[in-house]
Image 1 (cartoon, rainbow, N blue to C red):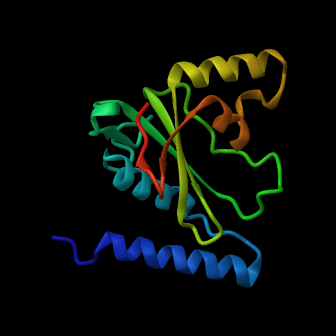
Image 2 (cartoon, rainbow, N blue to C red):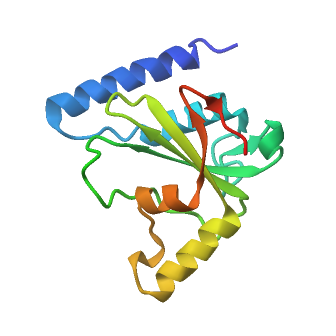
Length: 160
């Protein structure tokens, strides 16, 4: 039995990270942990032990993505007008089936979650690399364009 409730710890982490950003103008490196927590809770994913899988962070439990090996990325958006915000490096040399991108507001509250299959991501990166743009990196806007929206606070899980 855990001594601490993880949900309460994540809520406190959100508050501290937002306060820290307001006070210093700098971000604490907690977005990825909050994103992993939220993606697993909101999309019905089973989190894996740290580094257990190597290329993915969770397994799908929900019928829409049952048994998918999911890589989870997170990004807090502080300025919607700022273009070129990037997602974390995708592990193309590892085993995974899909990537989810958890987008959070300035309070580190999840606002949207997008999902793309490995094939969609690889096709996009291949096309970008052939044009010598970004060399494997991807912007949030580009990921949103190729992925599908799978969760919002108002709708919950969105299945096509």
